[in-house]
Image 1: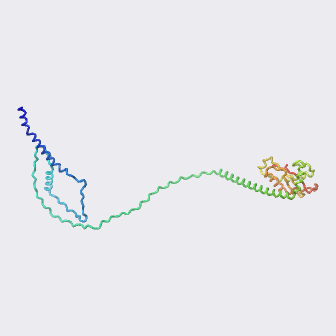
Image 2: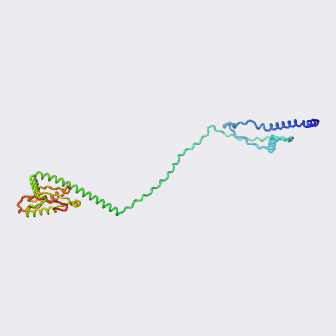
Image 3: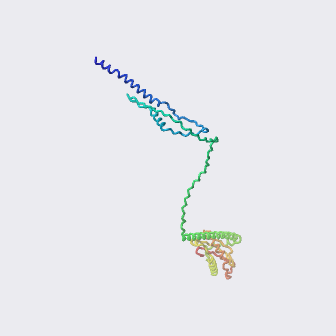
Length: 313
């Protein structure tokens, strides 16, 4: 028990000493760091300057070396020293120096400030440069096909042959038209003038075999052959008609004493209108026929001619 009381007396001064040391440290820290925690404005300060009254600042006066040293020492003294336990900072004595007054410097004359607003230079807008168009690509040369002279000549010949064939076809068509008109006119004339003779020929043809002259005398047969040979020399038809060997046309004629054909009648038609027209054309071209011989003692002669593509039968 005596041991505990003695121990408490020895340690009783330590607690107040530690507390005093702690509060001194807090106080020193507050003196150093609290001024730096002041509120700073978020936006920078705005200064307004009157340009009309603006005057150039006076030239700076260089400070002497002692003044610069003194300011440096003051700054160093103003900075708070770090706090250390049980250490007393030494304070140096600052020597005061008297600043000499700077010599007055003559201020330069103020420049006249113009009240008129400064003119802004207006830049002329240049027109935009035209863009260079790309050069058109040259078109590829088209090679002309080579013309074969031989083929050209053959084509010209074929064209000429076609034109010639067309011309012949037109001529044949015109000839057929003329023959048709002539045959119609002849038929009307024969029908008006020789109706009685035609009726007689029809009766004679019905009384003897068709296309024959069996009742002729010797002199009449000679005259008939002469007429047949004469008409055969005028018988002409196109080549394509000659190939149709089955065509046959029988014609009855009445021949006058002077060899002119008084009447003509197609007893049996070939069935081809063009072929019958060529028969009539041959008879008209062969006129006048041979004259009737006086020995026959007749003023007219009736004959039957049979026409085929190869000639007269």
